[in-house]
Length: 463
Image (cartoon, rainbow, N blue to C red; front, side, top):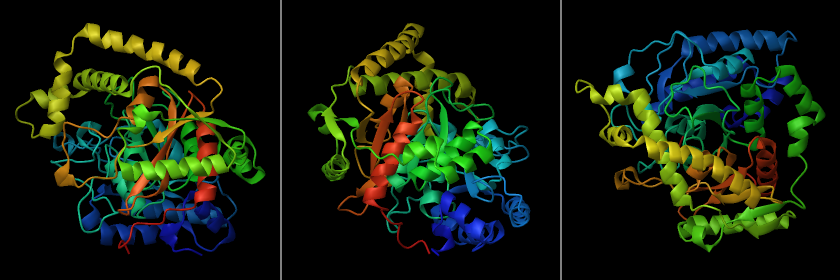
């Protein structure tokens, strides 16, 4: 059997079933890794070791006595520190909320816990979740585990979840995605991250940035793990998820179909021109692999430019972000991240006419994109156009969200999945953009791609 920390959700599920390990052993092992490695990694805002071991003990007893809930039972996970859990601190990445104790539990957190999941702790986020690089000048920037020697961007704003899962401190975790914050850290950290369709998962109990665009989602190490976690977060009955896994029906049956005969949209020269050559090499290799699997590749001319869409998303986030958090940044006694403050305060002066126009354009563009994608199963881009940059080289006035914000603008779903390593040894990521509520298709394509390409491996040095 692989080292315990290498086991993903489904592999843990199998190991528990045959008794090669149990939730207590796994949880204890991961907590030991967190204690040893997070001093450098800096991924955790809070570690809930005592509660995790109590939950693991209960899960181990239940499973051994034949009372297994389903495929998430006994699986350790982490939550981005925007997701409230009653009795724990939720900072939202801010010093201003450093002592804020939650009085509620988010619906998605409740579902994961009720399915038998073991919460290891809360992971760091960009202040109020407004930033794509993963940096936080007030509460710390996690280390991207793919470079032990140089601090590189972990990707934001779900930076701590990305870093902790990549470094094998947890098999999976929850991020939130407003303009790419599940997919960007998944891309930079070599993970599989699912941005769900707008409105599919409840936002109750999650600190908002933009109520229009916010979507929570799973960050894992495989498409199958993302599917299990997604089904659990949606609120599917654990026994029905388990039955589907065992009988290969429903979503899991869809994921086994392969992609032969599917038509997939690909970038035109206009979009290719903004992609770093090292990422473009991986993208082209991924397209060759998908074609070898029987997919038909068709260039897709976008009805609207990606810059128009991403700048429109930035305006919506700014306006709604100021509504929710402007008071924190208006108060001169609060010590706030200056990079985030600049973004939040920009939303204060945006004219209402512009905001309303952008909201209407989202609906118009959704209709236009659905028409343009007629006959296509999905649209393929890199998740981000560059590999993870060195933190000190980052220009905070830029963002690696050219391809991710487009998906939030449209309200579509999208899967970020590893497509290899660049010649510099950093992860490159494929984004599979699906129609609204077509998560099954994005996962099907991602699973077929991963079955053929294999695992990109793990970051070195985190032993």
